[in-house]
Image (cartoon, rainbow over all chains, first blue to last red; front, side, top):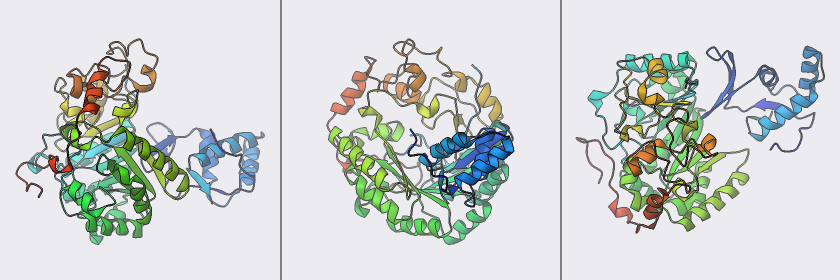
Length: 92
Length: 364
């Protein structure tokens, strides 16, 4: 379903028309954009928070692997490939 | 069956509209200005909607710009944390109002386009409108709103789907929503004049698929095919009372904008009840939740988890019983109703029965 795997030097940024919010009703982060909303899990929200156009995929992997004390590279690249495929994350 | 969190509220702020499109999604019996909810009512509804889990708000109509309090309502929605879309014809969107809406925190504007051919566009809208729409689109772009062009497709404009998509790109749209007419209310009344041929639908599908690839990354294209030409019905908003609700101008609250025509149900009003009570407890919202209401062939069909039996409004409009399978479905003998409609002789554009509010000037 997702396209080619993302290069580690790809710099992702959340679509300029989308914004992340914390939904106090569902007690979780959501990504809001024209005519749509994606409910995020904790990992997804942590990844997307770093998609600000200043971190490469490789840097995001390093930061989150350190934070979670585990190798999260597969999770990060798979998640970002999906979000890029949906055009909710684009090249920064 | 317990209710889920709704995600989307469509607020039909008014039924008043300068346009008279013959496929209008408003009901045949339009509500007059004096029957509309007050500013305080709408604010209360928006707050209650957010508390219930709503994330997306459509500020719609009719023409929502005819509400003088639109800016105040948009500001309140933003304060509550809702992502708001103004669904407009573009008529009445002056620079002053667009700037005030931007300041209020409105994020997204949808402008309807009737056709790429200006003459046909105005024939469809029943009013001079093309120049106003171009001016409005330029303002939306300039002020940096997220910008969607929406187009209702039918016999008279479907062959120009490619030109329409190019036109939206030329206007600077971030997105274009192309949706074939849905045949309830006004659309049903005008069905013989609006229904495209199978050949038109096939060609349009090919053009749209090519354009989706061509514009990828620049403009998002969504294309909704006409359900009459499909084998299975559409999954209406993920099922009745699942994620979507509509508040009509007079406060009547519906699971779908077409639901008022289901005369066997009584719909409650936000003037009398909280939105939460209506969503969770009211008889109308619970009428078709889950699948215990289903008859065969839906009841024993594995597809019921995919399409929830299709559209309740369409089932009622075409068969008189909202609990029937949507007659679009080829698994029900009721399908002959849809096939008969597809076999009807097409009527010319001159025979449109235009939508207008009684007491307001009729289209010329």
